[in-house]
Image (cartoon, rainbow, N blue to C red; front, side):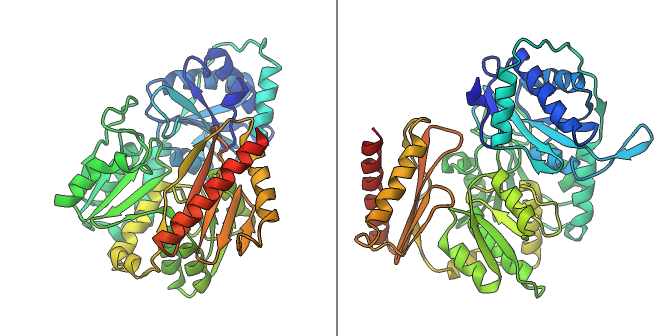
Length: 463
């Protein structure tokens, strides 16, 4: 069962990996850890058909551990995060949850589900999750009774009210936009927020439906943006798309799809207008254009991929913003420092109202040529060994290959004078992830070919 305990969350197939016994034990042992920080935990879930059942099992485990469960119902993941930073009235007094668990399969296929966990306002991840898995596996004989009582809290209402107040200056703004919620959970927050602010939008697939009948809820894949692009051709100037649980965003104009790293650069420029020098954290997959552009007006920090990694680094450094290419955007500026695609949409709308021309600014950027993420299949047993072997090969041949720098924060990012190539082991699947960027198509192909040859050489040495 250890495979469901992953670097950033717990995730598996409902009924097989996530069954009654396992989920109750997850609730119980997580509850014991939450109890070290306080008595209350907020639980909520996404639109998946089996989320309510998982909620009952999870809450039974939390109750067995003596945790008082505050239940927010069906909400996007950022609402669960929000609840960890804000007080609720319980029994005549205000309490702030000591932990939060969002039941979500994110952008996985419909049969998957899982848990994203916060304790003491910080992500519960990495070795913490792996150790939890070992503890549960050692206690499989422990029986947890059915006890799914919880206290309902207005987490969604409080979240929507907060955003409506923070962006009250956008009331009545009409950017001529379309929004695709992909039948995930984002629509239950975006719909009332747009109504409160009287912001019109062409709405696609706002109805939560865990079977995802229209397209897969992953806006980082171009094929899932086809319906939105059709609307952009005729009925809208801007488009937003959300993943299944509302913590990743895609933002498009009629001409461009603005990835998370480019959005981070534009957000930083907007922050710099107030005279501040913003600090922004990016992952190893982010474009050099982002790093160079931010360093001109503030400070850019390169760090590991993964929403948990970036949240921790954001708190450690006190940076203003963090971003992943895939659309996880974390605002510490005016917000709480977690990834919230709905909040990110509102910051984009704010910039549009202030006259920021995304197309024009994008077209002024240095022109680089890049690939999307390219996956190389391997095994969980071999993927990290391949990366270690690749690092040794690169160091030994550094001079011959005319390598300018090697960044080994997360996998290996190999920097040449005219571009770079990245190879990293996925923390969640048995693959290597590669990405390449260069100043010309020819340089891009040369770097890509070279790195692929070196990967094959490393795979051969690992066996």
